[in-house]
Length: 315
Image 1: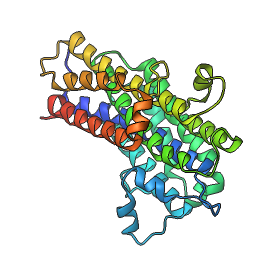
Image 2 (image 1 turned 135 degrees about the vertical axis):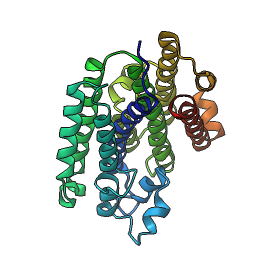
Image 3 (image 1 turned 45 degrees about the horizontal axis):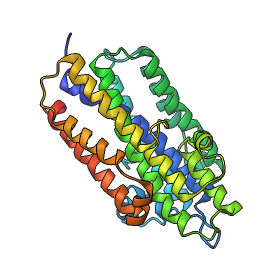
Image 4 (image 1 turned 30 degrees about the vertical axis):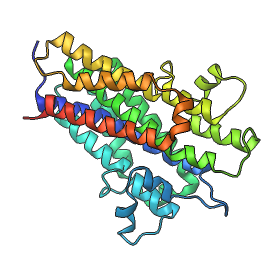
């Protein structure tokens, strides 16, 4: 079987990551609107900037972290590489280069999505319209994932797409949990109160995990059970553990199915990381510090991505 060119492997890996990233940025903005209130009733949009370590670059532009400025920065600002529009533009460029590798339906959907975003203005993403805008972005990203699952030929390009999507998903779920866990724990709501339950409800919905969580934990919400669900429940596809396992399986199958002669450093690192996550317990994570644990997860994901780049994408 013809082997995928290194540049095509890299393009489909990042195209899948970029679509997944757009999906999750929309989720983070949506959940911030839902319960990111400060004591004075306003929203703390600076916390969103800190999730992606963009606060210094944003503030260097002499901009105040208002809803209008932060929403533009993360949705439509083409000069911000973290923005939804910038990621969509890059994903479309990758898809254009991949036209012989991907289905017509994948290209058509991504191109249509890009054209709809390109025509949006500041007034279209106001705080009042944010929930609707985020819903449309999430729907477009999920539709692309569905089209990919149904139409992309299952050769080595399929596996690079799966690896990219799941590594990004693990990273973004950890960021969402990291951004909100401390705020929820330090909030004014008493544990188990209606307000506290509403906040955990919003967090789980932002990760598309509300109904799945309720099937497992039918008696209510708690920081421990919700965080443990998003981190470690492998039956929930968007959990960190499930995403890492899927990426690991795809990389293993890539080597076995297509006789990859690359060294397997990335696979070894991913297997070790998978084992580390599976051996973690939510009570120990909370006791030792949720932020430190999630920060360590994100560093491992960066290291694995670097190994993949060296083994498969380097010229």
